[in-house]
Image (cartoon, rainbow, N blue to C red; front, side):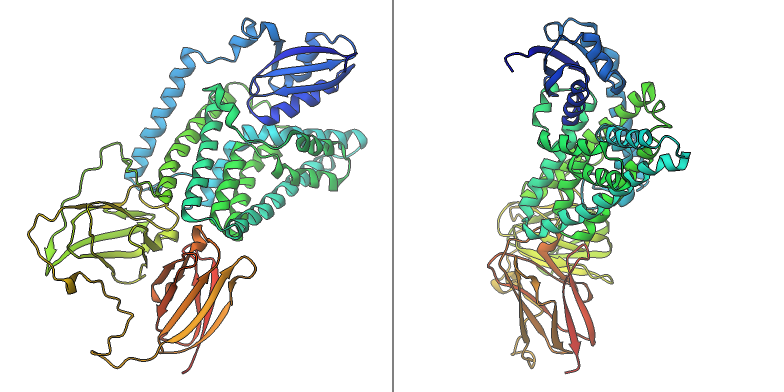
Length: 577
């Protein structure tokens, strides 16, 4: 390198790790250039060449990609430096977009058009994930995948100049087919990996926080705010990115397919956030469908890259990306509240801009505090209760309209897990012994934010006997009141080697069943809760603890045991006794 000339340049307009690879590859094509090292964080480029390369040559190499160049010593004074800085008008427009989105959210929420727990959470519909893909397809993902697609298509058309229009379009089709197949398959693998590595509820919460922070950092980058945050963005090792880009020179159909498939490993910020999200799902199907919806969302822009390349630039791109970036930042902050619930931190954020008022103290009937709640979709109504310490609580829940994870309730501090009946009222009883806050949610923390009981001192003068305070388990037979039938004792294990094993357990009809689950790994997320929907039974799995599910089968046939999101864990084959 001692014989090479070293030139320091400032690259204006870099915003992600993929920019580094793109600029490096463009500069390496210039005559005399031997080595290039670019940092998107600082925008600094170090170019080693055997001859002098004029500044305008560097400018021309990357101008079409939206970048500009100045000498490193002129990085603060050149016209390009000021062109990429926000003006007072830019900040005003960003603020206006924030206010518009918040106002739209409040209006739509009043008409129940959007879910209560909006964010990167398990209640995201695949339609909403598709919209995230549309946003990504016009911003960072276009920069990551678009250049590879155009390079592969150009190489193919150069080798075969006499092809028809449809034949020239084939590399684009193969590229996108490979991308969709790869995202779906590897998304499923990541989802399955979430169950293998056994994320606990707290682990899921922390991982969700990381995914949210990635989204926030990406949004700030798109808004050109807080440039120092670029240092926090994780990225793929650069040499791997260059290896993948090298495949763009392949001229075969298979090469375009493989190239598109490998873009899964060149994730933009949106892709990375969703990859972390599907890891928390803990199942193959959810991960595959999530990444499929996202990849389909990026498809329109990639398919029409040539035809709409001019449409996606200029004022339209500027305003669309600004709106998208603000939305991404809000979703990231919103989701942190849900994730904190899983980590054990109960933050009660106001859902409609106001302050959450303390609920009226629950009335006392026959020595019990009576509270009622309805579950609709992914929200609790009401979601806050005030009860007195030392007095039993009878919690009557109408969960017939609960959806997904919301069909199961967990109160971690009290060790309570309860599945809702699809018909009628589900009753949960407990006796609060200390003042403070008792949070509750679904196992994935995706329900109404801040849902909790506030326990206050006993000021009613009500004195409850020890017998009344003791909780009762209706599944335990009292021989003094009835003839008890010996329960069928069955067992299974949850391990890394065999997963949920066995997958089928035979039991007799009309005889109580006690299933003891030996959890050898810290299963988290959806798979960390076992439910029997037919009988409204659920159990939060604890490592090394006694995990027991009790029910009495009332009909022969197959009874499924699933996680709250419907993923199969095991089954009972109920036969005539």
